[in-house]
Image (tube, rainbow over all chains, first blue to last red; front, side, top):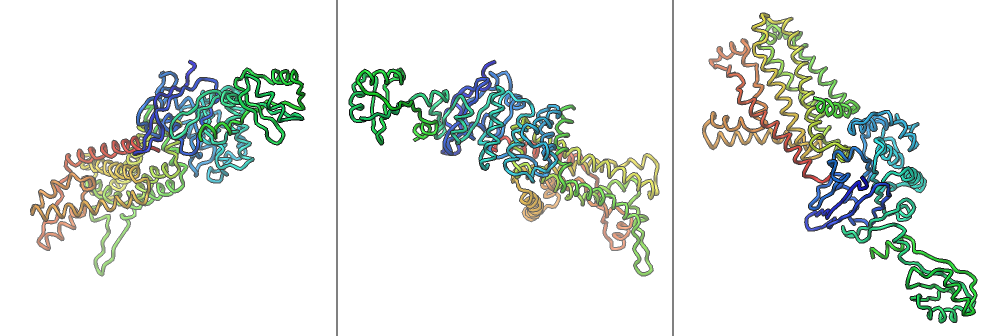
Length: 297
Length: 280
């Protein structure tokens, strides 16, 4: 079974506002998906619907190719939505024990999961005494209790200080490296870029991009060339049939190719034949953040 | 049965770690045990000495009626546990997490309801044991036929507790705030009284007004345990002296049980509907 989740035309309206608009996507096993979008783009609402805490207006979603009900599927996955929600008067261990009772799984793994997130020494402290970072780590431990086939994390580093962000990111990376399928909703694009291999970008409830993270970054690239005579070199370059545009910025030539086929080696050879010798040539790709801003602009 | 035990176990686990609920729970049973103290109370009014236990309040079968009626005054302690067990789930946002962890909305409501059944049953069993001990100690009549006569008051007490708790659970789901839910419950009690008054005023017929108002949720629950004092011989004698027949007790009708049963089902069903309809 390769599809863990299949979402078809999922729609949610709040009065006149369409928060999620006929959204369709498929989550395949073994991938790490980034769900990107500006605030109010429908990320949390989408996750809320597939986790049964927000009622869908239209459309459908199927867990494990329709072989399980949502409730059955939820016992096989782990999820954290927005801020961590636990009983403040219970200790970390007691809270996780309750999750085990709900998920109908043995509680032997609690200590192991607390160890993974580094909370072993605070396991008998009440949840209300925890810092936000610790609460977030406890939430991750909770979502790992059943060794989930898929993990859904909605803004897991929200509100954390840089140290906390680093810790959570490290934990997520470790889980991802173990082959667990992950959906990571985040507005921290570098986080998505580092952790995810697939990305779904939402805007105003609509999907505006779906594909590999590498695709989104590779769709556009350019070469930065340092030469003695930039003006002359620009003229030469514009005669190349695979070059779209050449821009001079601070004596640096930015060369935008027409096709992906144009390599740095080709460019170097072409200029050398014309008697232009380069001081440096660097291939540049936009960061996910730049592309995201461009796509959602 | 396995399903019932699992859900009850989940709810019990949540409650047993909640300090306020533990305190209220213990306070309820300690105060309930206080009914036994009534047996020791002796009034000295001039030359007249009244020993309450000797007034027949612990006589079988009257004791079932009297003790359940007195115990009912303490329901408020448990009602606070009930309302907070629902509203806390909203304020801690754990209702959302419980559902994400794999509980269905139906299971979530049922786990609360099963706990209410267990709580009502526990209180009823406690009142039964306490009344049996007090009755065997103080009753003038102890033949088995008399002891277990009128024991249906325990069923009425159980159903009354479950009725109040279900009503309050429903209000907890509806308002998501303990103070508002309890406040509404008390206002509702007054509103039903006003409705009854209006019915009597408009219909000029007490019996018809009572027949209609018996279907109101709180009145139906209240009717399960009518006041028992006027059944006491002392009260009857007092009535005779002033020329009034004050014993108006006519028993608890089967219809009362059915009405409350229907209301309990309604409250549980609408608690589920509210949870199902709302986005969390």
